[in-house]
Length: 339
Ligand SMILES: NC(=O)C1=CN([C@@H]2O[C@H](COP(=O)(O)OP(=O)(O)OC[C@H]3O[C@@H](n4cnc5c(N)ncnc54)[C@H](O)[C@@H]3O)[C@@H](O)[C@H]2O)C=CC1
Ligand SMILES: O=C([O-])CC(=O)C(=O)O
Image 1 (cartoon, rainbow, N blue to C red):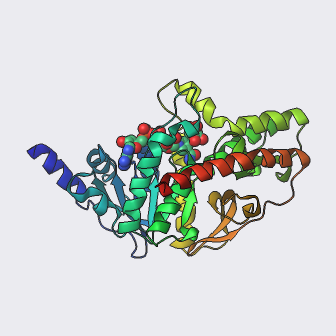
Image 2 (cartoon, rainbow, N blue to C red):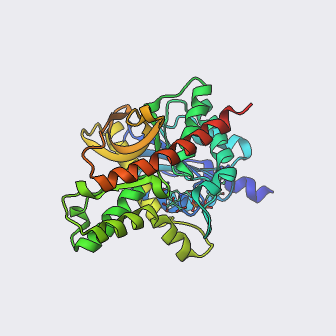
């Protein structure tokens, strides 16, 4: 008992001096998990973060103690539910990243995670709405197409929803697309910038290879599209029951978080990332959230880019994505608004 208390208080203590005064407090919720740990490691390297606040239901005191020995200037604190840990973790946060939730096993869809993850994300969103209502919230937990609307509905009910500050993290889809195309075209990933729109599951992931500047055979387009849409399954199968993508997701999550901090903290202009946000693009078809490239600014979403020119094949992909997205979004909203 004494030992646990001592570890908790050590973990909640500041371990080092702060970074520059306008740098951000960033919380990672689910920080002891497969994504949470490497993501926190990558974020510890950011000079735009003054305080890295790690929350999980278990093990964050150890993760925080470990990371706190890295000689970058941010302070690291670890929090567990005990002693109002979630409130401590969130108070004063500028950015909250949420990889808390269970991952898939082979044979499952992301939607199969809904029953467990919807309530985890809801409860964390309720705490964010109370303790850091102005924070940017970055949702990694699956199914993203439903967990983003869940956070939005919670914030809306609390009267604090700002659509410019809620992001579904779909960065891994463009990271994969870039890598897969670079392999096929034998070019550097720097020369393989691929736009991916839609959502973050199977057919809702819509790569726009025609906008890449590369030419592909019909076979290449079909194979690449399938691989980008089902890249997550590749990892789930290879991990054989032990989880889904964690390291590539940590890389992608850190890329998105760093881009947001460059726009919000460092005032950098023209920062563009793909992300699943509240969007008018397909609102006429009843789709309230949609991923496209988004320019990030001081307040979060600055400008939602249009889809641009698509070919007939890509239009069929969009047409297939829309009903699935609508149903995923409706499911998330209904979960919060049920009687
Ligand atoms: N958006 C994307 O592109 C991707 C999303 N994911 C999703 O990210 C989520 C996390 O994946 P992993 O890190 O591999 O899982 P994991 O099981 O390794 O880690 C999840 C962590 O969440 C914690 N947790 C559970 N309930 C919590 C709560 N109420 N509050 C705080 N923490 C809680 C667990 O203790 C655990 O440490 C999954 O839902 C997965 O499907 C995974 C890869 C890509
Ligand atoms: O496939 C999964 O379940 C995890 C995920 O979202 C991804 O790797 O894209």
